[in-house]
Image 1: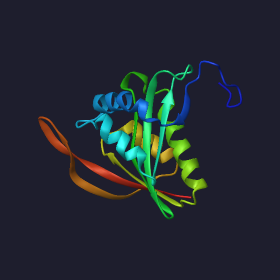
Image 2: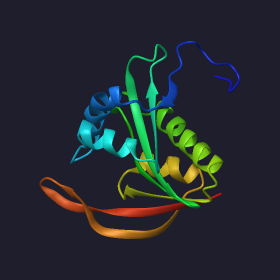
Image 3: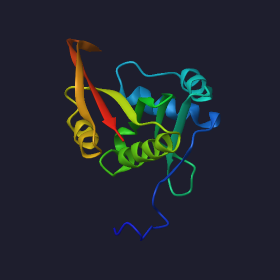
Image 4: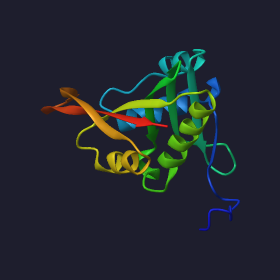
Length: 159
């Protein structure tokens, strides 16, 4: 679809509201070894230094994904960005991340950091397309049941 032609069925990105914390927690739990609770997500999102967004269906009723970023001065960290596993591969992660990057830039942030599991090829492809570069690695960082712990790659994007 052309960038200027928006279908009425397209998902939208909105600011997080506490009423959506439960749906966000369910998506996080389905996506990560240790999911965050609704209370953890709502508490993080309530912090003044945190930006929180949700991706919603076109009727703005169903949460499809969410992102949280913490900023201090000219630096920020993407704390999490996650899309419902059944909805991945449709550009929702990119829309969430781009919304975060735009909002952080408007706040004067010039460097954004994030951590990603070394084996998460789809996320790494997205991050690299948006200008992130690897600046570090944490070996055996992500615990996995019955498997060796995976490395976390530390990525940075400069404005």
